[in-house]
Length: 434
Image 1: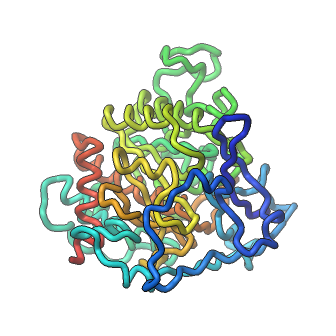
Image 2: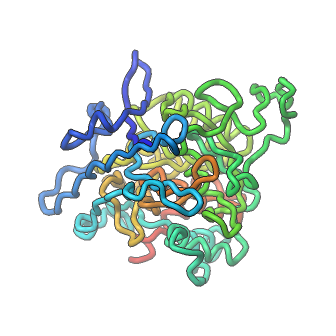
């Protein structure tokens, strides 16, 4: 199995994001995630009073030809997964694949608040399902705390207080969450019961039964290849899906919104490559086919007019787009997460002690950036072929927030993008702890 990173490139004038082999970069002292640095402008100047945030060390490269996934288990679209532990039948196959993640707690503590509850590092802070769901139904106090759920693999759900919402019956019921990614293993036993199925299509008849422009899109659409095969030959999208909607069956992982349904929208190939145009088309497809939440654990390139239009379209139709902030350790979110000033939410990654991971892009200096944090270090979730494993990255933090949004919409389906943005940020950790 290979641990890979992702790199943004310009190819013949077309914005594109491609996978690169970390074996080519392991010798670099500071391997670049986005070599097109001219497209990235940090919002915060260097602060000499703050202790420098350590750069993410290179993780070891492991190969396991016998047990590797087709296409190699890749990383998130904008950044590398920092480590992989693959689990089969209870045994770790890559015991040394545990990621090493430096923490930025020194700079977090020293950074002053730019406005009430907002910090240039962690934005509005840790997302809080108990408070967000309560506010969604008109309550001013969070839902009551409940005992810790599950085992050590469920730390993410516990950190965001999802069990408090579950205890009151809010589990994401009736909400469709689109995962725009490398596809989803819809046959995984922890996901198969929560996969969206297009009610207007007759499988295999070669016709566009529902007239939406896509033939036999029974389980979503593949915008990377232009067909209806949305299976995941990579692993990234399946891992994301499990965090959102893994079944509450006492096996593997329980998703944050374990009664929501996953709509697979494959905009990235099995190698982790995809165009901004394909992603934008995926957003419109998801909205038009009933998704209320759209998870985008991806990023790369510069501002795209087509992408901006798609994000605005989603917002206007009541869909909430949740985007990864990026893993450069930069002062502000990468694109399209940077669009959260206007639409949707962008998400940074914390560990199980709520410390911001050094790889996570920060919030930036503008409180208009709707930036929250969520678990993104050593997150345990589903992998293709009935497997489970732990990955790290803002890709892993983002589906925690998508799950919380599904809980909110399951509690109050009348919420729109602006309402969700306001509730999430006004109930997050930095605000509630003031």
